[in-house]
Image 1: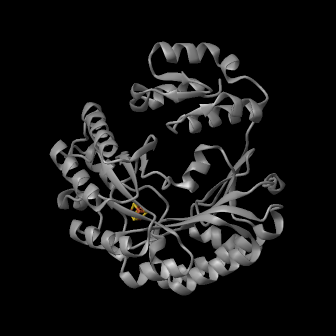
Image 2: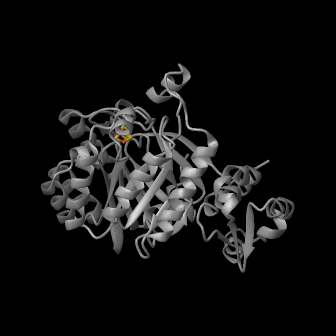
Image 3: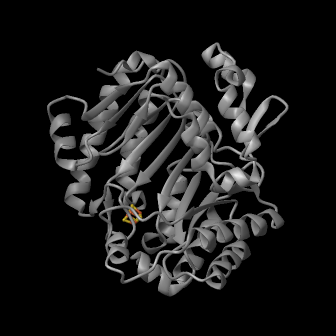
Length: 385
Ligand code: SF4
């Protein structure tokens, strides 16, 4: 059972919009084909879900809001208006609260960008992924690089704060092509960039193509070189590398995502959304039908709940915190768990320092440059026994 009373401090709100115009070949997020009819039903359920939580959660303070998906850029003005109206009437959203909406270049127009702003959204996150046509095609994206460029210029006219996602280590991608995409994005000077190496997730079209031998995955060595190339170029261009995959101009770091890495609470709404109270993790059904049905019956659509013990919490705190370049503060760890991080993990920390994967700087423990590339080797050491 979820103890919603554990939400006793300001939290981040995540809203999952489970529709896309079509499925990208690499994507394993929960999303189904967009239809106006189902989107309307989903919004009615979402409002019911917000209403239930507004009555059960003790704190009414929201720090950040993130609309992800799926393709939340497909929300209509009226749908978003109703959702925000409901949230703002039932919760108090911090004045400097970051409100992000994810969008795809293929479904954005200047009119939409302006109405997002009018509704109070103050940050957009655009899934550009690549500026190379063949790569976009392989990824199953339905925008062209020209369209991505045009949309970024439009966003830049309306928003100060926005992110662009790029993907590297795409099967068949050459270093030249990766450099080309980097050059294109740097010319457009977005305030924030997220760079992800392509993960071949089971069940996706791309995974099947690799399994059948139709396409070849990029080697680990090339993957690492692409990452280092990007890191170097972005550093030269003045971006702050503040998390393994994230770069920002000073002051434009994603406040919502930082909340995840700093082990702060968040509430996820919509099908497949995940939540964390600070002590318990729970998630909704990853399917629109049971999601809607539960809410029609006035019941939260929670599929799974995991109550964390102290050891699991410490482990998660470390693994998430080490993703940040500034790492973890020993003092803050002690304030949080009442024990000394250095003492508890003395052997593991010593071993990882010897392998040059982590280092200690003042009050903080951080990944080294080598550790950035081999993060998983570090994280596995802190998993509960
Ligand atoms: S647009 Fe995003 S959520 Fe939708 S299928 Fe593509 S990657 Fe997945």
